Length: 482
Image (cartoon, rainbow, N blue to C red; front, top):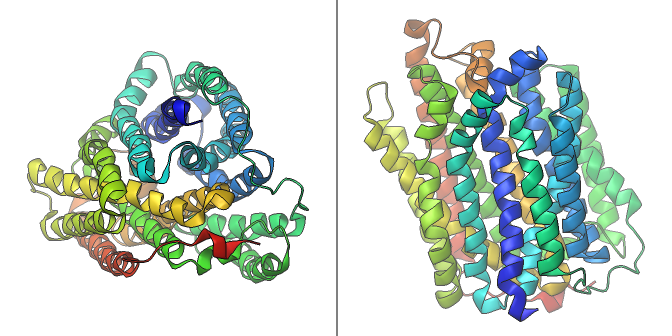
């Protein structure tokens, strides 16, 4: 295994690149997609969110099942599902059909995402894991940088369908490359013979779907909608039942003793908070560039590139620092950098702010993300130990996606205090540039923007305190055995 570790890393890095491109190319293509499918703006938003919601719902199950039946096998099947539905999505004849295809594509993405980190952790020794994960995160940054430009070019020259079809040759390459580089011999975790947690799996899907549907339906359509009420009731009923079953089941879907490990729990919590803040900034800047400054979607995407540049440069270095000096220090300094960037945005963002200042705050946040992500991920995986790496990887991916979903629930209501909801959705989907009544909206919009940045900065203070709390602690996977 050890002599092939870098080949294995190249496989997971290619999967990470496709995942990053999947979001950043599609958002640029939404205006053309709306025209081509005669879709509403709300349908376009659900086309974008369906993948993320489905991925978030399925990712924990994918990680847990992989611990039982094989991480590489689950990863490869996920890549196959993702590639097949990327192909089929380009042939969608209507928005509802495309939403269904995006859900199925998201399930494939969950199988890839849930197992990527675990496969890398299996291949690399503990003292090199941070550097390896840093490479994966660096590749994600590359996808975030080239995605808007690639999406704009594909849509302009070939049509919106190619934002899906371009995944296909790379997906086939990833499948063939993975079969050669990883082989199909899986790490044995001893879980395959145990009884499958059917009741836990059903309750998990109910409560997670209810939570995510409520959090996304409310801000986009209406908080007083019956869909929101039913979704949250389903969550409130299913979640405690799920915890009760998981606490007793001999082969639980979610191994609750993982959370008794302080290093693991603090790493997961800080990852959720930082993911929430990063996505909130991206949402706000898209509204700012397209709504307040009247740039089109492609230009808005290009202007947010500094949010990925620091991630690209710093991630491998942060992984090396974490391997050499411990994960807590670089991860905590990363949160501090993100806090400084958010304070800069809160104090400095206005209608006449020079772009170089915004780029500076974006770069600070990007450096912060680069310093935080790979050491924190390494800390989580090392705390979980080999037996529960698939499950830990799934939980890590779940909380990262949950942070993104929460950012939608946090930020959109604040923006809609000053921008009509229809205009807000049109701006985010790229079908409207600028505000229709700027004199009435801009002042309130900028105030709402500042409020979001201050709230996110406060969350970074909390994340920093939690990160410091794990200093000097070590994960003890042996105490978490079933």
